[in-house]
Length: 145
Image (cartoon, rainbow, N blue to C red; front, side, top):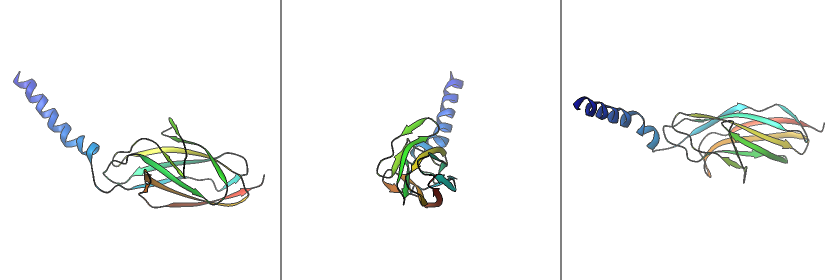
């Protein structure tokens, strides 16, 4: 009986020391977005942004969001987190779940440009409505067809 109680106590201490800090970590949250943005696109055809969000802090990001800005007319058709959850894109943001400290999540943004020209894309990690990382800027040459 003492062995079982000792094992349970040891397990509780190990769990508390390693797992609980990941779940309850407080402090300043920060994250970065990286990934592939095509250099060219065609008006009216889907364009795919394959991205990753990296939690660069030890704190929990809840909800984890991607904030995106575009200087030409585009429609964001779909944002998929971790290849599973398709989430709506509203007011320049899409949010999906949470991200623990030092964790990375993949996402795919599908958008359709509606005008020819140079499309300037800005992407940043956010926690809800608060931007928490550096802005990633990319340019895409959009042709008429």
